[in-house]
Image (cartoon, rainbow, N blue to C red; front, side, top):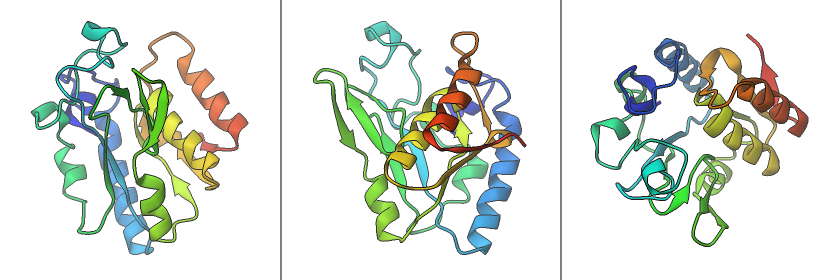
Length: 186
């Protein structure tokens, strides 16, 4: 839920992103009232990375660390509390779709982000994944959560999809469901 994804003027703006902010804030507050852990992930890319199209990747330059585009939406940032896991990912030559792991592009190796350990330390069993974008980061995080043994839910009302290729939304939802993710249509 960073500027470059949420803001219509962001470098990798996701259509419909702004309308998810208030309901996500509401969910965060409800989860906190119910005593649940809330974790945040944040793309945190260097200015030069093979993740970006100008260096061989898929994406325009986005969420460069310490830039305005990398900042969390202010309504989301206001919900962060001391002790909440904040996972910054993609800070090297890597694709960092999942909150749980990154793919180091030069070597092809996956590395953990620390999210699995942070959740384990806090006794988290079930995971709900929301945000942008459903066909990339949300999907990858949900699939990794299931692979780590967490019953996982993705409420579609709290995510939007990039739809890089026609049909990506349907394929992402089908892949998540096939992996055991509970995908809520409303």
